[in-house]
Image (cartoon, rainbow, N blue to C red; front, side, top):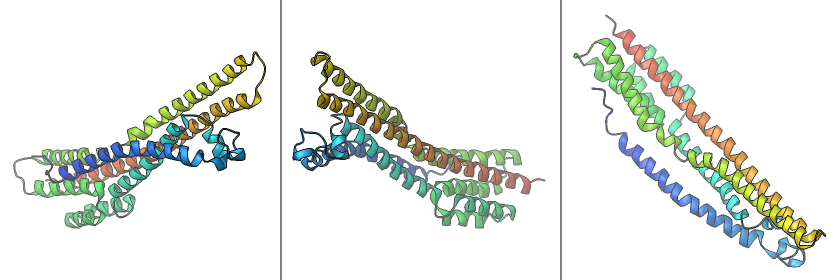
Length: 276
């Protein structure tokens, strides 16, 4: 009795598939772009003294290039965070709908208080998005329960609540897709930067050892620079990933709360209006 209509399933599966394809393509593309930037832009002779890439860097771009082979990898991580953040902003924005979610919830609650289910359903059509889809599924079940004589009020209210929960289970998972990638970059960015730091320090100590305790300031500075560049890029990646992950989880929590709040209002309105 409380099954959700199968119509929303296909779009959700399609969105899930699209997000998976996007992730599959975006990751290698970001890495390729970062490698090209590292070779052809950061490695350009104009960023080094005398136009010689083997000499000391002349600007910050040359310094980053001297960070070593792990630099394009960490740069790829930064690019991934940016690309997936833009993708999540678009997806969550579509899920929110055409207007503020707070305004939408207030309108639905007003219509429910007035017992105007048709107006609430029409508002869902205007709002669009995942939240509106879930609420509309609950309102549709509301209408079905009004003509059902096989269950009592408590069973009908439970059926409406179950329908809303099932619709939520169909709509909400797509909002969390690719967030795991951003969360993973928090750790990977730091670890890769740390690896680059360790490699740079190994080179620095090796340079000291090869000179019998003497100092080759040029080679030593290059090794330390490599270590610090990787550290900076790794920390930057992790910091950006943490900020964006928290932003998106907060947005998703707000959408979930809006669904829960409105769903509760639907169930309570039905129970209150059909008491004998």
